[in-house]
Length: 174
Image (tube, rainbow, N blue to C red):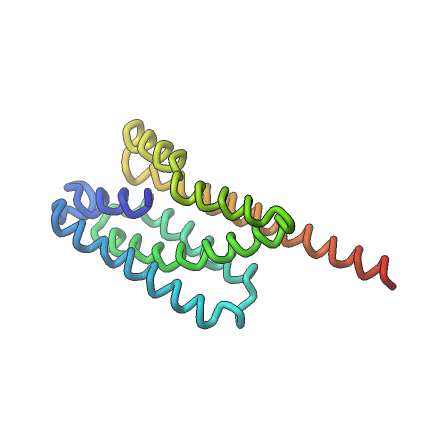
């Protein structure tokens, strides 16, 4: 939610996109459309793709887009920021599946917690809004960039742990 909101600001602000609020809010529909398209693509092709690789690619692409937003203040970058919707659309199903798999017998509680986290994501918007107020809009894109970097690290760590557990099970059976 916060990424779309700050992208509206990026597109509307005179120092960045300079489109005005009404055109910016109309253009942000592209962010949500890409989220929609990405979910359908993932539903169709997700089982054919290595989820760790896709997760890292999409997070890395989002980081690069955030870095572009910090370095270049132009309306074109505002349009590029909309592409993060496609990246985000693939992340949630991967995170959800990984978390429920790890929760095992507590998967119903885990699902409830994940839903609350996705609905109530109050920390990142607050952190980015604070950055906007203190250092400016373009610099505030450090918040999502660092978040994507942390997600890569956490996801990679859980993948390694799952592989170690699988190896241990094989060794103990064999």
